[in-house]
Image 1 (cartoon, rainbow, N blue to C red):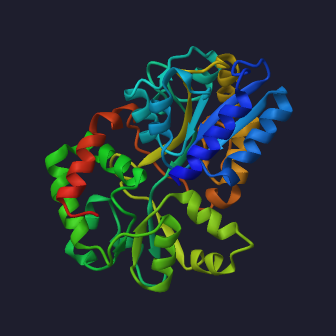
Image 2 (image 1 turned 90 degrees about the horizontal axis):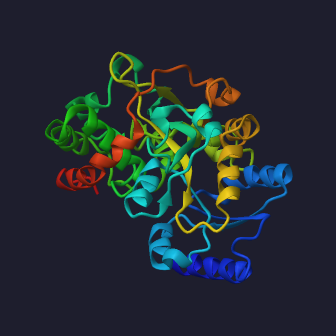
Length: 339
């Protein structure tokens, strides 16, 4: 992956050499999958006439930006999780911007209070359970998943996954590190297997009977239900159901995909236009219909598939606070034996 990232960025650097601040270009580094973000960028290009040059890389973007420093060709950074944006800000890789358009479209809890990053879509991380083996009346909160009644029944991704790190950091913000560490030890004791694979793999494992419940982002389940090219995944997704935890408490954990303007941006204005476009009605509808994520802009509806999972109460935590607890979340998970 690092070799592929280096080659891609080298190609982008060559392509933009001598024209880093071209009037009709924006250079993007993104951790998002191309299949998810490309339809949005195509519409941006059509609507604005600005050419979007993109490096797609799941890992290594932060390290590359740090090594490139002020010479980086990057104008905008688009990520799949708030944790990466928080890291980019902490490393001084983003710059603050002022945008009435973004402030009007993105609720305050889903953007940086200093204007360095903005949420562009929402993803909820509920419990997914085997519809034929689990009575939803047994389910209640994330905390309840440490109860011994779930021994050998839970599947989840590795602790190295930023989605899980952000979820645990949000729990620390709500309950404190000591309480969450005690919870994590009980939670880990209930794992059906050593964590491996992505969210789709956890859902497949529930459907196959390897475990009874999992924690997964809703857009993965929606993607499985609507993917005509993967009938085995559609069949598996049909065997599970969604439970919204903590509905009588703080609410289900919600994260964002989002973006910011790189500190090195030569095409700063175009990078801002990109973020504003992605927070606008057209792109928000695409996030819903093509990506199966929840629009961050109030008033734009979710897709029919995602809406079918039901309404829920979301945690109202300001996502900027996750950064206060991210390092502790990683250490805590390691001490609990969550590998």
